[in-house]
Image (tube, rainbow, N blue to C red):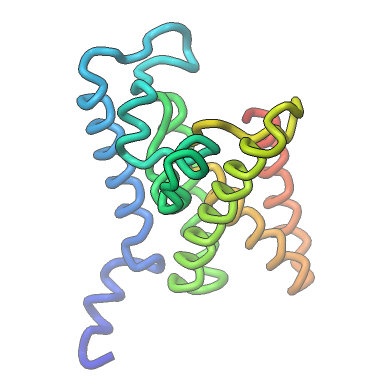
Length: 187
């Protein structure tokens, strides 16, 4: 590694990706609150400190409206860095800090970054398509506007479940399935 191995090792098993994601999500969340210009949601626990929809769109929220009506296809990559409320970012950051190091340990940091990024893009693409073409369906109807790191987090969970099945490690696979069920019910 041309003498960079000690410096890379100092970043940890995830090469600093987890602190980068957490820090970027927190900074972008604060910027969306500032861009909301006082129109911050404060009603109820799930809507506490929620940026308004305009600021989320300006920062790259995905969904049927930005992708299909505005043609902003790139939002399938940017929406995973945005969050809709204080509780939303808190839980997503906790899940990222819990799951990403485990996936990096099992697959390597490069593959963990690929899983995280691809899962986010695929998840937001699915949500956008579902919002456009199946918006009338109650459960899989997608969304006109979508943000959050849930799609990348489910990608990390999927990687853990796959690892458990591939290696025969029932503990890893079962833990991944339990996390997925818990997140699915909470979400």
